[in-house]
Image 1 (spheres, rainbow, N blue to C red):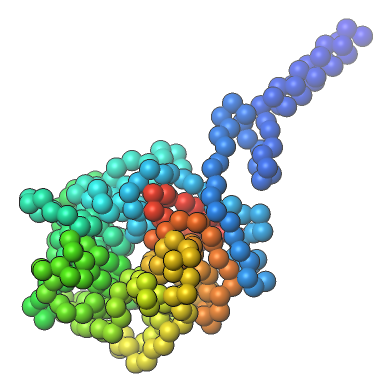
Image 2: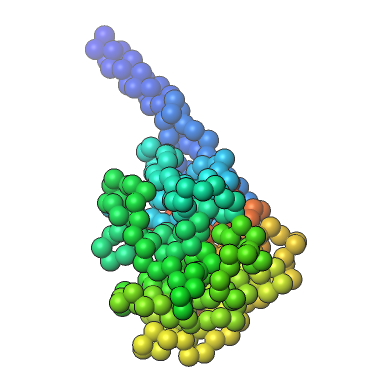
Amino acid sequence: MQKIFYTLVIVVFIGLMMSCQNTTTNNGVTEDTEKQVAVKTIGSIEFIDESFKNLVSKGAKIEVLAEGFEWTEGPLWIEEGGYLLFSDIPPNSIFRWDDINGIKLYLKPSGYTGKEERGGELGSNGLLLNSNDELVLCQHGDRRIAKMDAPLSNPVSKFVTLADTYDEKRFNSPNDAIFHSSGDLYFTDPPYGLVDNVNDSTKEIPFQGVYKLDNSGKVYLLIDSLTRPNGIVFSPDEQKLYVANSDPERAWWSMYNIDDLGNIVAGHIMYDATDLVGQEKGLPDGMAIDSNGNIWATGPGGIFVFNSQGQLIGKLKTGEATANCTFDTQEKYLYITADMYLLRLPLK
């Protein structure tokens, strides 16, 4: 009888300990109550087409991973190491984030290495990796495409210029870029990094271009008709090139057909969001494309999600001026840079 009593006491004690150590949150995840931290969320999700439910769960929330920055941009997932890099343009810095360590400064200066003080948007913007896993940067302040002359694991503000002129004239301020499988780099060049923007006295090129930098180092002009070319991505088969135009009076995303040589052969406006400018914060800006060809494009109010045919199927309504986004390698999460925030959305 005594043995049975002690056994019952032990069972009850274990049960009480388990109930004290574990709790269930609103999203169904069991967590340690002593370490439980409420996840801050922001905005809402709009399901425009039923197919959007295949990408995002109905109960999904946009999580705030970090805040307090000036203008976040250029998110880049680094698979080896499991961390995210992103630019904070005004303070000329790149930050690193991961689930364990949170935020820490990764690189400063990141976009302007000159000695003279100057205004304007100085820092790096778009970030990407080349085939050698070297960090390539769109540098506003230095007005060039460059690569960091140091390994990812030991960042140093030492850069090698990949391209800084077209037709012997300096670029405005390279903004965003994407590699083609051939190794050619396609990039946009709006005037946002210049002190006085499009009216800056140091502006040398009379238009805002979309360019291709080939493996030999030669720069080709692809498009000169967009007023503020910004975000740029390829379709998964590289037959289409999407370019955002961040002009308040021409706020749209264009789609261009690409031939086998990587040249543009035709194009048209895929979606015009000009009517929403002023009603919502933000403009067409950075983009990401998933493995099924869905386009996640930042624009007025947050992120517009289009299927591979260009049909709008959903929106991530951050309520903030949203600059850019990217996926992790497995497409489990969408990472978002929005004004002062670093955000994350879990995906199906």
